Length: 150
Image (cartoon, rainbow, N blue to C red):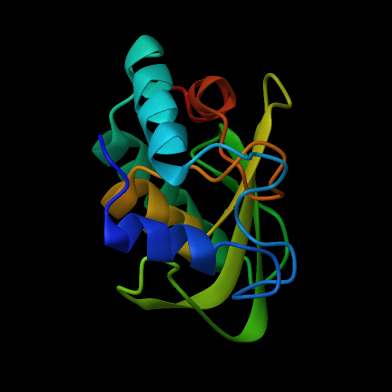
């Protein structure tokens, strides 16, 4: 896939200091299109569908919000803690604005853990973007599979 003008603009928006202090790319210096293609390949390798992952993560975020900031057990399998900060974050692809809500999901039997935000869910579902290597909100496919039991 080629870097379209829209992808170039999205990558510029992902730089540190544009939308967030840290940005979305971490230490990853590859073009955005290469990051997305590599993650799509990893998701296929681990047999994880983007829609399936999004549905499970959205469910856990919703259930976790019932804890009002305290960790709660969901389906006897996960411990979920959500945090909410004031304000909103725009999508670097310029197609939405999202609350600053994060969820930390821990699988009880393995202690594997992932952290994601409302914006992370959107990036995964709509853009197949899991964030760059080294990013605080990077969603690693292997850890996603292990934690969510996909």
